[in-house]
Length: 394
Image (spheres, rainbow, N blue to C red):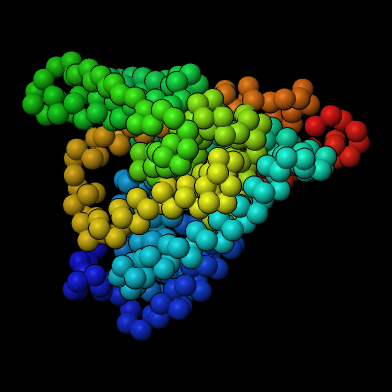
């Protein structure tokens, strides 16, 4: 990966106007349904295959580097690609244009689904789509398993640590949601300690303990900013890890929304285009209306811009850093466990018995039929609409 040519500018195809970046990245933000895999495929097609703006090797380097950073990896990749073309200005404009279309749509939908007295069919759509969300969580966790399992190593001790980290993350997500970040950090640091001891010729490894508390104990904008900051700067493993990070704070600690409304927010984040992390805007809207949604989005995505704009020239060193690699090797299984474990409190938020068979159908759709998340959520939401129109309580 080539270094910047000068202050703030990077080597790249000359003459790519900022207006072009704005238009093309906004288009991606409008059509980017399907989460990170779809975003990466769209970026590759545009930047590498169709336009030739970035080489295939540079693009793969960008994927590898952004996957090492906390926060939404596909959003960081979108920022990185725009940064490669026009430096910081390109990164800021490209990243913002990728985020804004989904943000506008999700705020509009939040106003509809979180209204005081929504129509019955809207409640049915929300309850139906929400019933599928635990299945989506399990599907997301499954997708991360192969690479993480391979990364930890093949020895019995390494595989045992992987299982231990995953169990710790799952248990934390199911029981102590607000402190999940501490568990993720502890697992990452434990793996760093184990590998450092192994390099020194030590034997058993190390035990890492972590303790801490909320920086904010009262509600309000400061609390909302803290929750959003955890999403943007302390989440490892992709967009869906935000669910266990936010759920307890949004529902139990600050009472910004009910468990059912949180399910709706997760469903909206999955079914709308753009970053999955935009679920944080739904939480912000529930807390403080449109200003809260905008604040939560700004706080959650600012770390991604800073990571790429400040760290882009050093991505090679980041990828080669053995401490970072070890930390992510330990935190990764904990993230997978946390995503899977979040299905438990999500399922406990169900309010109607009919949501259970809808969940069963979503599990079959995602795991047996191996079909897409967006289509599964739309089918579940449509089922809820039909039930509401037929007079079933929603």
